[in-house]
Image (cartoon, rainbow over all chains, first blue to last red):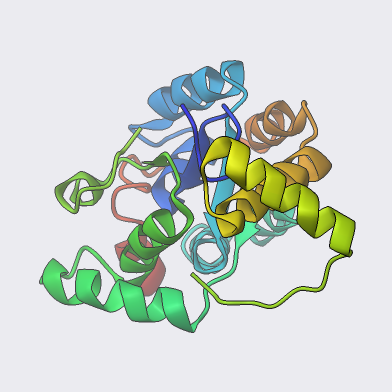
Length: 142
Length: 78
């Protein structure tokens, strides 16, 4: 598969639910998340995450689970360059608007709309998420 | 896409033009591809993906919520 970066590696945008499922052992999707992350590792995929998803995941871990240390640990992992952080600029925000408006659901937020805009702007191969809304928006989902 | 202006040595520009003719691509496309390839090679640590996944695995915690991923918005904001 050829990407805009000219490599054969899969370029995957990570969604917050995939990351939360991965680190939360109790989650119903936890085992599936591990399987998928392992499969993507075997394919030497490149991981990307929007700056807004970073904030979303850290906030979720901190607020809901009171896992400030876990949130801090994950925060540090994002700073290692093992995952590429995608800036969310005015163009991305503007592109996200149409998806946000079309959502019409309380479930799908501006964070999700921004992810779609990022996938399209950076030509990511797919998004790793358990949220089916992305596929309904024409985005390939792992 | 963002329009930008760059300066490059004349001989390098000539090489870009030659590559564009050979590949029958616009010079802009040749430059984009080469910059993207260069940045990827510069950034790419072959172990980067494995390191990230191993790090995630090492941080397992148990909040006792089975729908945390699916309803994380609710758990975060409500």
